[in-house]
Length: 450
Ligand code: UDX
Image (cartoon, rainbow, N blue to C red; front, side, top):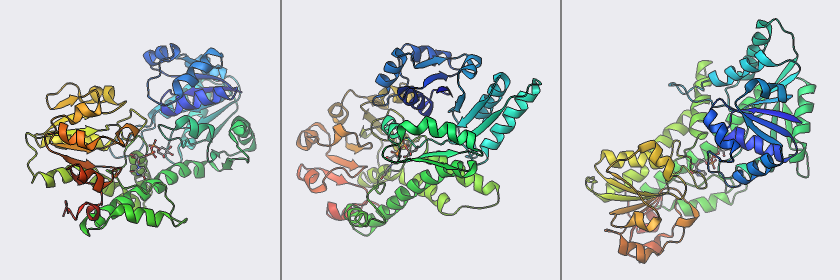
């Protein structure tokens, strides 16, 4: 099929490359000329395992092209995906100006039938606005062209985006007629394994599904984080609790890892956006608001533990951070707990020595050069002469350090394990003061907070 994708961010680029790989002819369009020039040269603006090769192979095969020429791109694809950004407004609602601008552009140029599919995460009701915008733009030029709109939210995770797209748990398709449903069933047929994974539903339910999925997952995390705070204060070990509750199939082991708060481009934004949508129609969400509040509080937990260890005096201290991205296998630092921690440390007069396998350029881009931030080339360099080490992001390479060597390198052997990846007794045996998340029982009842 011939496919056009507006927006070459995470979702647009992965969708374009994966759809091209299943034999479609895909044109990706973006207004950012520099980005398109770089993509055409094979340079991928984000770090995502496997993406560079996939883009390269499909460009070589002539199935994937990049352009800034919207009119030609609209002419190309019968299927027109909107995958542009929906940055949050001041009040947390999603800003739809880019989505609606694309709809207007498609309406201004299309000369025959187009199926316009929204892939960006958008508030419930957006497809109606896209339909109106298309109709307006078509009638403004005195034309009459048929079109359908559809909602097809994307559930991919950063760091595993290609696998998630190629082997989806489900493909959600929101349509209001069979013609649109048939086009999307055909497009996604290659991604059905063993059984049909395409779930066709009405447009509003499809739009809500995306928020519901993310909020359900974010709720699991916030609930575990809240329980970890309780565990810390009760001298219990949340890791024992996690394993025991996860064994119940109704609860399950996924997404119950306590940590230093969820970040990224989706969870925090989507939690706020749905709360806002509900409030606008007169319904105050309770649990969803609490998910956000608990997460904001959890993001300070690493700093709180450092504060407690150093009796509130972090001025002049040097703190090493391992991991800056909001999670492993990405260079994305949007809403990353590392940002909250670094900023609090700087406010307290501490210096940060940091290392992340992929996010060093991004850190430099966000914070620039500053005296209280030393960007290091590896994990050991970051720990050298530090008063404390904080594991913020659980990258694989941080999993089995030589703790005796680390204790030797550091000024003081203090470790805050923001993801509970280390065994407290093992770390303590190397001379470290160990602080996990909700693990006071496992660390000789070191009650650090409260
Ligand atoms: C998420 C959804 O998983 C995906 O389906 C949706 O399309 C976009 O949002 P992503 O933001 O890439 O994907 O990251 P994810 O792997 O879900 O992790 C989100 C955050 O939750 C990270 O900060 C992670 O560290 C945190 N997390 C996750 C926990 O703290 N504990 C857990 O048990 C799981």
